[in-house]
Length: 389
Image (cartoon, rainbow, N blue to C red; front, side, top):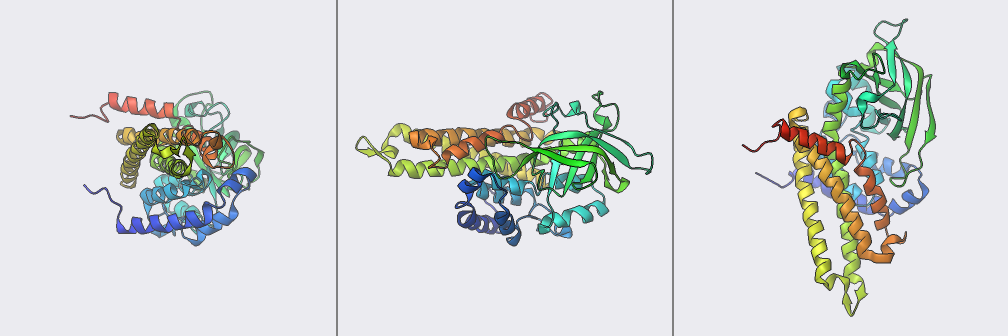
C-alpha cells in the first residue's frame, strides 16, 4: 500500500505549485474584488497544458485522469477557489460525454476543451429543483420535423461558467414534467449560441467571484439526434459521483492555504510578550486542523483513485461522498480558524483569510450539499455498500 504520488503526478504537482505561486497568488485578491473573469490565468493554464488533464490522450488531453486533476486543483486552490473552479469545469461538463457519449460526440466536444479553444457548463439545477433533481421542470419533446431530435424548453440556474461556455450539457424531462420518474429524464448537448438560448442574469455571489454563475433560458431550442446523450438521470448521477473527489480537492487546497497563511501570521504576531504561536492553546488548534487536512487528503485521493478506475457506481458512493463531505467541511473549519487566529485582522480585506472563509461555504453546497452527502453515505451503510465484515 503506497500513499505517495507517482513520479509523474509529483512532477505535475510541483509544476502547478510553481504556477500557482507565481501567477495565481498575486492575482487572487484582485479577481475576488473585481469579479472579472481571469482570462490571463485561463491562458496560463492552456499554455501549461492543464485544461485537458482529465481528458484521454485519444481526444487531445494528457490522460492524467481525475487524480491528476485533483492534484492540480489542490495546488491552485491554496490561493484561489475561483481558479480551482476553472479547472473543475474542464471535467464537470465533459464527464457525461466521456461516460456515455458516442465516438463522434467525443471527437467533436472533448478536444476543444483540452486545447482551451472551447469552454462548457453543466446544466442540471433549476429554480425549484436544486438537490431535488427529479423535481426539474425543463422539458424536451420530440421534434416533429427531425427524427430523433428534440425541442427543449426550460430554465436552468446557478450554472457555474455559464456565461463563458460555448456549449452545455442540459438535463430535461422527456415525459410529463410533473412526474418524478427518473427514467423520463434525458441529457442533451446544446450550443450556447443556438437560437432560443439566452443568458439573462448573472448572480451576485458572496464568494467565488470571477467565474460567473448564470441563469440560462432555453426557448424552443432544437437539438439534433447527434446531440442526444444516452443515460438521462443515471448519467447525471454517475457524472456527479465521479466529480466528488474533484470538489473535495478544492476543499483540501483551500484548507491548506488558509491554515498556512494563518500559521505564518501567528508565528510573526507578538502578544503578551511572546508570539501567538507560542501559546499551547493555539498550537492545539493548529494540530487539530492539520490532522483534519491530512484525513481529508487520504479520503480525497482514495476517491480519485476509485473514480479513475471507473468505480463511481452506486456501490462506491459512500467512499466518494465521504471525500466530498469531509474535505469541504474541513475547508469551512480551517478558514474559520484562520479568521479567528488573525483576530480583527482576519476580518479585514488586508488579509485573504476572509476570502477563504466566504469561498469555503460554496463548497458545502455545490454538486450535492453536505446534507445530501450524509444521506448518500447513510443509505450506503444501510445497504451494506460500505460494511466492515
